[in-house]
Length: 336
Ligand SMILES: NC(=O)c1ccc[n+]([C@@H]2O[C@H](COP(=O)([O-])OP(=O)(O)OC[C@H]3O[C@@H](n4cnc5c(N)ncnc54)[C@H](O)[C@@H]3O)[C@@H](O)[C@H]2O)c1
Image (cartoon, rainbow, N blue to C red; front, side, top):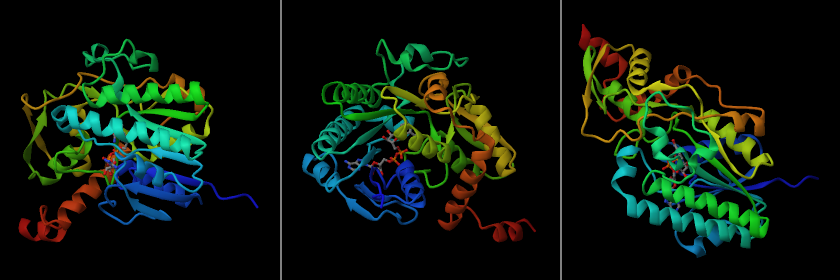
């Protein structure tokens, strides 16, 4: 009988990690989840879920013990643009400790494959100064000029993965995510990303009403729905490609267009108030998927409008549960 594959997901209490655990369990794998917290909105279906701080090497050894075949290393101290611009030292230090030690513990414990979740923040900032961007190819990360703190650490850990492959023939995979969104993601408290923050602001706004948008709204991005992200992770882990791969869509939108899409999904008429004091990150960023298509014969394809619907509905329902947005019935009766 074929042995069931044993998989470790770190960061399994977080947004992408939790979705990945659900998918791996649905596909029939044995899964251990590790994090410093449990998933916020629903219990994890992992076979084992352990609370471990992976900044400590002993905990990394514990997480990878007893014949783990594959590690998806998603644990990271991270958040949206407000958070990663404000905390360079802590983010860089925490993530350096997690990643360097998870890599070494996985190697020592005989893990067969290790996937590192990198980010589009590794790309040279000078190539992202124009909203009319040329999509970023993997080689555009060099000469190195990444996002301070968070991006430098990701780029360095990518190199570390390459060294482990070169020196030990330890099988590493490197994935550069471009803005992942979907239900069960942080939508409040300072760590949320643009799509979730905008869904929250739209859900909280009156109709007609006004919402605040960071920057002039002309900055551009592409956004990937979490189901595409999880599908891409499984495919990249299974493929033979060792170097970095973009994982994102190339559907470029301005933040103003993102706001309009969310307002449309919500059925609200909203005016944008631009706040030029808050950080907006790079001016423009898009994913070039040539190499991904070559390596996988596949790329993310869920359209932004399609993915925003379940994301908005989930955030609105969360806000209703918290009593911050009236339930649909109350809304109807207060309108009469
Ligand atoms: N979501 C995105 O758009 C995006 C974009 C680029 C890269 N990434 C990367 O993907 C990965 C997952 O991101 P996410 O969006 O799910 O973020 P997330 O913050 O929801 O998940 C990260 C998880 O790591 C855990 N963690 C932090 N410090 C830890 C520690 N010391 N020990 C154990 N666990 C710890 C957190 O508690 C959290 O649950 C991260 O590596 C992130 O850098 C995400």
